[in-house]
Structure formats: structure tokens, C-alpha cells
Amino acid sequence: MDHPEDPRHPLAFILAPMLLTFAIQRIFLHFFSHPNFHVYVGGFRVHHLFTGALIQISSAFLLAFGARARRLVLVALGIGSAMVLDEVFFLVFTDGSNEAYRGRVSFLGAAALLALAAAFLVGLDARAKRRC
Image (cartoon, rainbow, N blue to C red):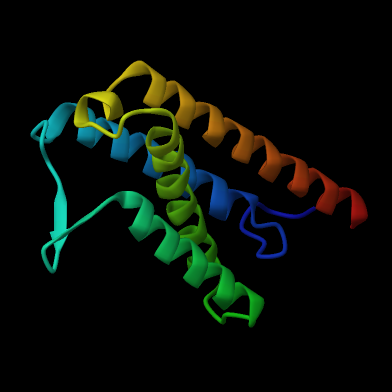
């Protein structure tokens, strides 16, 4: 029987970091940061969408070319995915303000996108197990 750590079944290595990153991000930004907390690099404001996209794309490229540290790359893919999914709904469906990010629409939209991504991952994992 396969174990969740088996690199041929990456569900746990993507899903757990994705859910944990989303939870940590939202908890920190809602309860522990200043309402106008932003990260600036070279004078430019950086949303976690940009960081997440960089992590996610890099991870996908590494996986495509057979990364040696596959488990670590899968974890990075989960982290980057959470960061992107969290920001997408906020930036598309709200006015982009700090208040909107902390609002119900942003949270529920991001949670829905995350739930869809998680369901897709679980479905892919189930399909892979049926093929074995």
C-alpha cells in the first residue's frame, strides 16, 4: 500500500502546505499586521500574488525538468498556489483596498478558490491511485 509520503502521490506535499499557507497568511494579515502593512522591494509594492506566482512558476519548471528535491518543490508549489489563489479573487472582485482584503467577499472568494483547487488535487490523486 502506498504511503502519503510516496513521491508518486504528491497530494499531501501540495495540499497541506497550500492550506497551511492560506491559514497563516490570513491570520497574520487579519490579526497581527498593521492595517496598512505592505511589502516594498526597490520602492515597489509587492502583493503576495507576485511572490506566489514566482514560487509557483519556478516550481512548475523544476517539476517539468525532473527536480531532484521533488518533495521540497511540491511543498513550494503548494505554498505558491495558496498565495496566488488568495490574491486573485481580491484583486479581481474588490477595489483592492486594505479594507476589502480584510472583508468578507475577499475571504470567502479566496476560500472558494482554495476549496476548488483542493478538490481538483484530491480528484487528481484519486485518478492516479486508480491507475496504479
